[in-house]
Image (tube, rainbow, N blue to C red; front, top):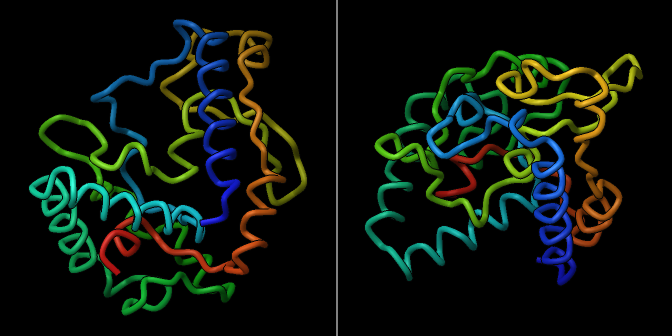
Length: 198
């Protein structure tokens, strides 16, 4: 991992806490609220490296939990690899237009293998991917048509005004993440299950 990855995570965690403070009661995210823990999503090479380090650390600290996570990951792969839009051996997502389009509808209801179904907790929370670290507060993004907007979890800000949503925007250091990905020269993407066991 690039040394500055710790800086990236520190900035993200600080910005999330600040956005959560500004959001107040409008941010519904709590342990046991697992809607965002269902459905496959792409993770980058930094996320994958963090998950590999995390599962190794978990094996040292709590072997039973690490094994449970890996069992769920293997079960996830067994259940969904036949339709995986990429290389089902390596877990790398495909880059063709067809594969990218296919991923939009892939494993949309599948629980993340890191999710403990008994507690509703993420068993690899300290090493979770960037998508998980950003989910909940309003985050600025640009869609395929070039339209900019603030997106947030649909369970949050249900009674908030547009001004309240804007006031709780979470700032994301996309440039720093891009620099770190350039440092490791790896633009491949995968999903959580494969990162945990491959």
